[in-house]
Length: 402
Ligand code: SAH
Image (cartoon, rainbow, N blue to C red; front, side, top):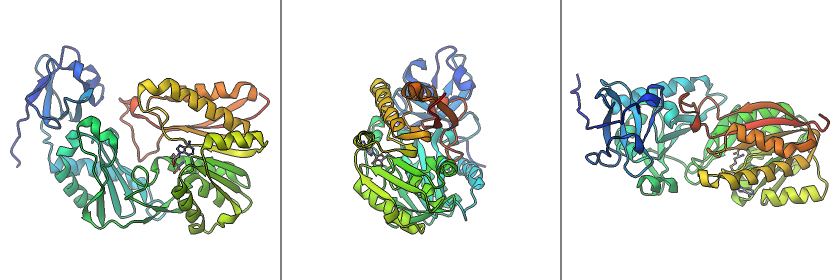
């Protein structure tokens, strides 16, 4: 039996425990009767209602608008290695939907969606890439790494705390560091049976955009024998899926990053495709689309997967304009009856916003909404926190005559 630990506590203002009771996992500083200056940044604490009842246990940061992130609502649950192991086991169980012979790369832990706020862990075959985003999770780092080693059979764990977003939490931006086993420069993965190479050390984010797996799969049915334009292609995820559908399919990949474009070519070869049959363009997508439109070029399928145009609420207005411009340009290079897959990974741009942008871009073009997606099963969302859905994706058909 483990000894019960007593955590320091803080008290909410009256009625401020209602959203927590509904399952939400954040407490904003304004909801606290007084800032708990007796708890250090990242420290664990109990949250009590105005009437003194235990509500939840979490960690605190005086520097951020979200003062407390909840880890458990069970007063008997200690925040220790066993707690972390249980959360990891629960997350591993969800990912058993993936047959490792077909898909061996997925997000293993998705922050609040898996009950571990401030933590992202991506699995690439036998390798794990960890991102610690909050001061509270940073405090749990030693137990966390130990729990990951015990529960995942990973042969190597890389901690990539190189995001500048860590500064908002008062954390250092670090160089990538191996904390267990060995982590090679390049890891070969399978996603829906398609082969990719991931650079866990230097690739964008954790090395590969796992949140597009289900949209890449969904794209296949539209791509057979078609002319496909993949904008913001990175290392060619959507491109390879499309090209594999049919020897007649022709794919143009466009990204501003020359190294990403080089890896995209390698991905074609790795999957038995001849890169010479396809086009790889290192360019700004806006410039590329404008020129394509001027030249009267037309595609059957266009994919738009831009980086987040808005990272904060203040940037939202400008971002909406950029999305509108981008989607308008994309529709102008689509054949009548063509398919547009458009995505937004800006947290502050909702699905309604994206649909609004599409309909403004469409004008008289007669656009049919076909399918909508978020981030897929390995990026679960706490249902009480719909604002944490960051990725929205829409397939539509530009029919031309509605
Ligand atoms: N679709 C990709 C992920 C895209 S991430 C996949 O499935 O893996 C966004 C990409 O946009 C990055 O590779 C980045 O290099 C690229 N990018 C950002 N701004 C750009 C611009 N203005 N023009 C072209 N590419 C851009």
